[in-house]
Image (tube, rainbow, N blue to C red; front, side, top):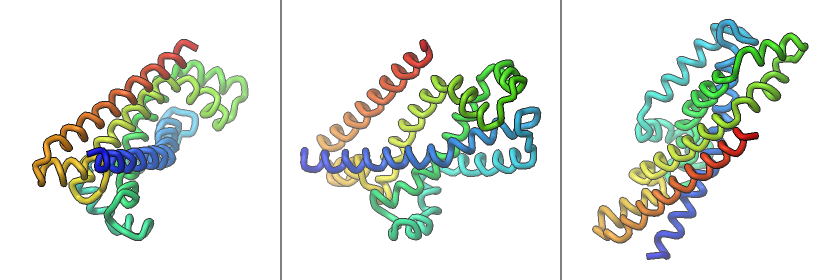
Length: 213
């Protein structure tokens, strides 16, 4: 069984790692823009804020499996194929990016506005406020949000197995469900649970450590 589980685990880790990186690259800047561009904030752009909010809400409303099918052409354009482990990274990243944006937005809004106003009065520029005030102050909450994002991506990657995405989800469906190999199904589920629990523990610990500092 190990010869089936280990390659699938590696595929899942591969998908989750790169999907997390790309979703952060897409979603983190969007979350920052959502906060600083809202009415009354340091870079007030109401129309841009409204457009970004609408796009993010639309993307978040798509069920992942439907989004994955819709994005097949984009996956083919980027990686040369629409199914498989590498191809799945594209829809995983796009599905998680709006979630990241909302998490970053929520975390940054927790920062005391008095700190921002103080920074402005001392002559800080908008980039300086973002990088030296907003993000550091919100870091414990951001880490918890990224932890939740990774856990969601693990869940998405398991669902992607239903339509040829590879990984533990694909293994559980092909062998555990279709071939009735219960031990493979149980092993896949147990590994996913361990992954989720480990990531949550690490995220909580890191967030608490930074919060104490």
